[in-house]
Length: 338
Image (cartoon, rainbow, N blue to C red; front, side):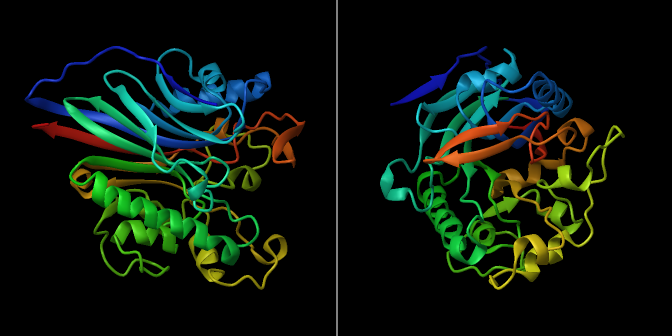
């Protein structure tokens, strides 16, 4: 049985005339987060979250609200629909002056299991603050496991469903779609959302975003990634790491639509920008900055090992690595009339 987990926080009343206000939004896939993490991993995760210092956080691969509260503390409200039988759920956290007003799944039920497998139903959370209302859609797309050609249709199908939903049900609202897309901004699933075109092809953009603005696409142009840094910097001793991975974008585009290769031996650069933040076009003028978290706490330590038995995860080893993903963030500078 699914239970809605929703902690009410401090109520904020906005005024009609607002000075410039800043909000930092982030998304973070935390590798199979449950309550039994090691002390070292918990310390790394808490350092990441403290340094990230985001006002609103989207999460993926969370087992239950208690696991998230264990690393977040009491500073944030948590919105999560908890299914005791699911271990890869999405969630959203917000701190004052923002508050969570409501939450729901957009595509629940088995009918949508192809596009949103393993209970990864799109989580919709209504958030208010600074005199504005926002709709956050937290997404965790089907992985590329099994090959891109075999799984592309699932991610593209999910993109088409989200496109139609945002266009019809959320028209005119302040929409933020964020999460782990398991594709980079050049891939077809993202182009469908950016152009608002179900028939959009994959490839580097040939025109400006017209439906959703991908605020993190410019990171790809500099070969920034969000997944795979832990393998590039084993045993890191410095406080930060370099985000640029030369050739990461070209490597992803090179193999699109071609499954006649061995991922382990043929793909030379495995780091990629999977985690992204897209906004409705009415929020584009407020985007002030975007980036990937690059403090060592995100990538230091030994990776946990998990195997699946009858679709249930079993930890073979609990490591200290916070996650195999690094958080991605966007800053909005809000001002003027709400």
